Image (cartoon, rainbow, N blue to C red; front, top):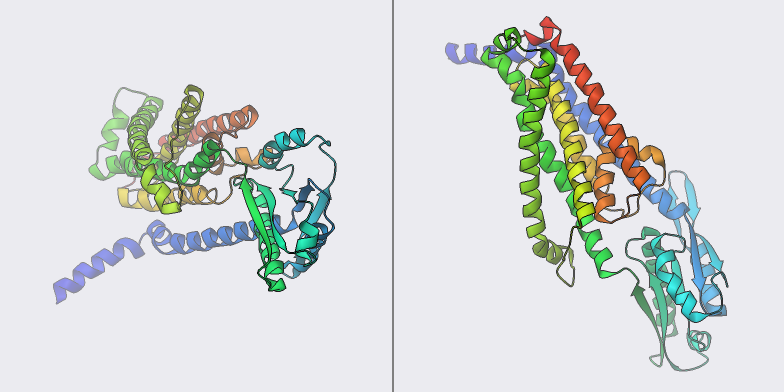
Length: 408
């Protein structure tokens, strides 16, 4: 029993007599969970606020007094509580903005919905007003044009659809039948891309960060544990060469691992479409230009992940400690992918494309949905190259510290 007690004491002393392990083992996980869920809660509230504070723009192709009444009822009748405020739907009905030629109007529907210039197009037949009010018996289709990649369009479409169905049911007469005919103007290619963009960025970030974590955590800390770091530092090579050698080798392994995982992801898309309820298999073709952009993004993610984990590995005394230090970065990489899963629109603010790690996920999503401008792509590439150079300088400075490099 005494021997068991001595072993327990020895193992506990490893933690409680090491301030860095106390922080990484007890304080860091709790702090990380607090920050993670606080950020997720703030992000979710921000998404809700945007959805219900957005000014919805609706185009009525044909004039309809009753449809205008429904839209006005929708605007004033639906509210959501955000904090201590109560926000109404704000809706603008746009008339005759796109000319009187019906062919020209229909040619603009998809583009305006896709670009979020308009959130809903409504085509009401001439006898809609009489049927919805019960003056005339009959059946009529109300064409509601939406776009599946426009979150605002999807929100207002659902609310209007539910309101029309409610009004029809309230008539309680079978001869009165108004059918909301929802028409999704998104092409099959756009729908395919949105399915892929929902899952692929998060998985790619996970693959790369997981591979980089296992490699980077052992890169320097493992040398310290094995007692070979001193021999390496005394070798007739510069510290810059050691750092670059470590990073390049880790990047090569990480990229190969990420590409293999990505191939597996693309091969499993049929099963994925069934899981999310898609009616047809996804066929996603990568053009040469898209492939180059995707390769650049994978390279950038690998650069940032490996270099950050190398910092943790250099500072830590053991591989286990390095893994604890690197875990917040690993979780941040995964979480950044999760935050882009539920919104297919790209941020309009330029600063979003220079936020570390998050901008890499935005880049992946923009590539998959073919909505990443040259300026935004350049911001992502340029900012991450700068971040990598800064991290490289930090690692080099750490290599010059004997206290850090020779600590065991």
